[in-house]
Length: 434
Image 1: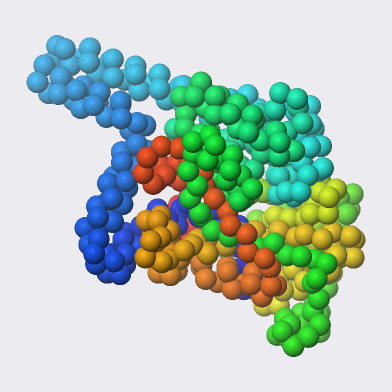
Image 2: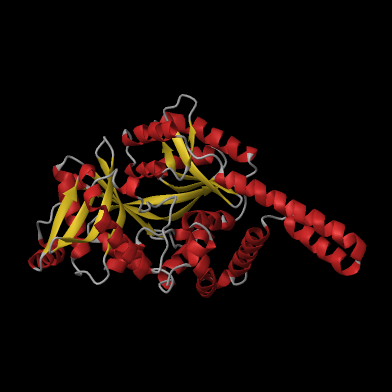
């Protein structure tokens, strides 16, 4: 159960890349009338994505080939060609590094963005306080987009934060900035509310999963449907586990214990800290939020930090536990968080994504959906897709679709690769996981 909870914060993009070949084989068996079309399309897209990632676009590859030709066949001109090629490569790499690094948000910008986020409904937008994303404000300063740059993509996270009537002009401003930097505009993990804006600005949505949102006003463990969950948390409490919700002012006093739990969790998962769409364990960030903890004999064995808004929405971000802790620990943690938030007057709790769930699979479904469904069904060796969905389903949430928005023709394979690298912090972070 702990592995299921740990995996629930991961990104969809990596799994699609790892399991694409298996998915294509399954689609070919199921849709015999298009025996060659789907594999050919996916293979071509995968090849393009690999070349794009390896050589940073269609310009560098020919230059490298031309340089090698001169090296082997024209020794004198080879030095000039190779030097020119290296100069172009270095210049492009420097430009890309500058675009990706860019200026960090100023402290007053972070304060402004945090103030806007806390007044609106998407509690996950509180991730802006990490300061690891760039910010683009509307002209009036009442809305913003947080984004990061990786490879050839400028990736916005979530819907724009602020009044909806400001979204169209802010999205156009974002697209103009992407064009100025010669990057493709991408929006990651946006809601259905964003789709009209995407269509109006010439971009296409691709469903990447569903988000579990719980109505806290209706949450109760009474009744036969909740018997199994009641037994789990009752057993945990009989075995000595206890729950406590710490206010931000109380968090620094236990930061050492929280850091120990986090470090051991990362070590057990053979994982490095992710980022961008996920919170990272940083003392200043964790201490700025309420933290729910589970104790055994007075010692913290599991915790989760909570992001909240003034409008009554909440989001569970970091969820970490010691290896081998009681099997009911995470059930107890989640249920008591829900009960505490409900009593405090919150009415919506975001439990996070179930990647690739809820994609249509009928005969007329888009190729993207059919690939995603096959990965969901057959990709358990790469990711516990069904386990994540099952764990969150036990709390009876409302499942809301989430999308990747990108422009251009064909499937957004390159954009998904860039999102994956952005979240994982590069190839090493993406693949550092057993």
